[in-house]
Length: 250
View 1 (tube, rainbow, N blue to C red):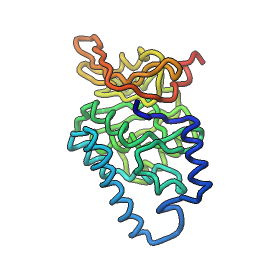
View 2 (cartoon, rainbow, N blue to C red):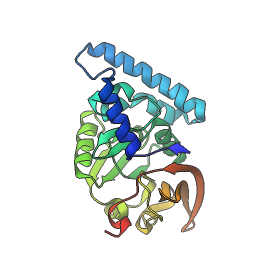
View 3 (tube, rainbow, N blue to C red):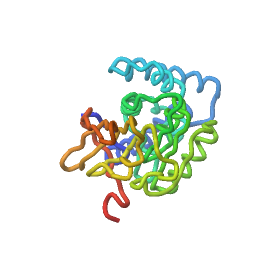
View 4 (cartoon, rainbow, N blue to C red):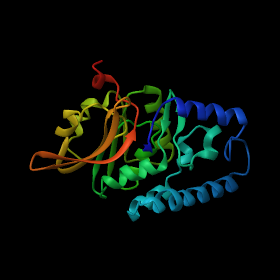
């Protein structure tokens, strides 16, 4: 099973362990910035080769984007030395940044085109939005946890991602005023596919979404709209945080 969590006790214990042992890694303390940048670039290159290409990610554009986006800028300073490890990392508010492999897998499954407009449900740290921004014309992303959404907006702007628009709110209803979307990516798991998202997907569009519960299991599905109908295919067993808000009846 792919560990694709954005939250949970494993991530919390990991954070406590790393901080408790003082393993802050590069970037956690003052030092030589050029050397740190070089070290991060090397770690990013190794991540692409060992975690992505070696495990079947083949889309050259996706691999190049994963090699460009500075994942360490989206994690807390104390954990930046682990930014390119094959694991989720805590980002505060009991949430995590997904492991690099699941980000690459979901991105590749969407078959992003340079002219696409993409909707993301669950901004989190902003890392997935940054990867998509390297590949498509526009990314619109919604985060229900206000402090995370605001921080992601600031980080994406600081890093120069001008084609990303962040909204704080409940993603269940999507973003109808900007629909239809060429692709939709969901990083939290509802127990069913929200109908508003289906309606906001254009003809020929793709959606990647985890569906199910943590208790009974979740599957990552790829949906494609053809002739007004949605074709659905299971592509991977996963574990994501449940979609909150309206998806849970509140």
